[in-house]
Amino acid sequence: MSLPLPSPALRVRDLVPEDLPDVIRIDAAHSGSEKRDYWASVLRDFRGPQRIRLAAETGGRVVGHLLGEVRAFEFGSEPCGWVFAVGVDPGHLRQGVAATLLGAACRRFRKAGARRVRTMVRRDDVAMLSFFRAAGMVGGPFVQLERSL
Image 1: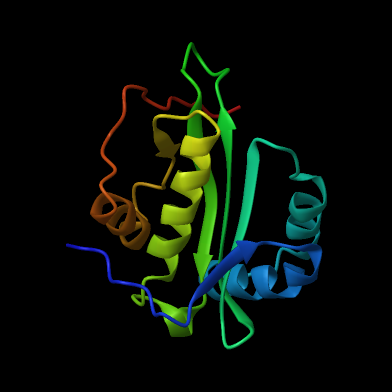
Image 2: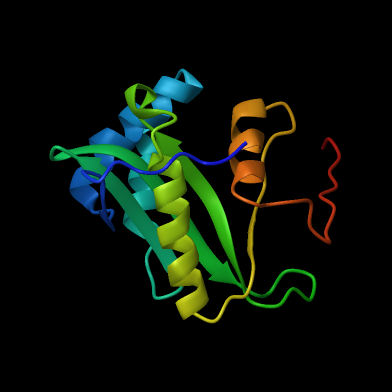
């Protein structure tokens, strides 16, 4: 599967606090619930030179977002880019929005000194797994482990 090319009308810019309603709307369309407090705290607190907050817009409307950061402290990992949130308006799926956002994030990660990009995806989230695999991502050198508390 190859990623679709973005529309020439798609513009990537920094995500700003005024984009909060769009982030909530996009996330709720996929998750089924509006996490207003969660997203408000993320957009308020997720700042700094190693953090990436991107919005994709077309026609003056936000149709996608991506948040990530360069991290290097987990388990001896070299500095790498981590994508921890990506969302696309349901009416703009399969139009290159997420691919464009990921490409912009990867350029920023590289500029910050990262040589790899990582993320975690639920194993039953087939659409997200398919997207990241189509973007060239494969299983990495770490295995996530967990247990109930």
